[in-house]
Amino acid sequence: MINVIKQEIDMEESLKRRLDIICDFCNTTPKIINGSIRKIDKTNLSYIEPHRIIIKNITFLAFNYSTDIYIKNLKNKIKLSELQDFISKIK
Image (cartoon, rainbow, N blue to C red):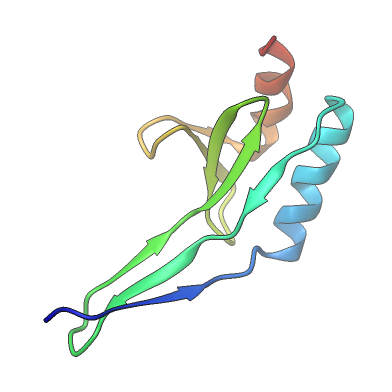
């Protein structure tokens, strides 16, 4: 039987602060769900689940120590510095 171990990762404080500042400028509040590491017991396989940030019903994905943020999935990415413009265009 496969045993999956899930371990929660806290969001980096500077990333959280940057997101809060961007959302303050856009007059919105983000909902942040911490990511996790999932390891399969007795193997060297692991998966890092990104942090989920929900802003205006759109899910953004972010990793600690990264300057990119992903929109809905890992295919659509923008720089964190472009997030304010993106949120401003959402109605």
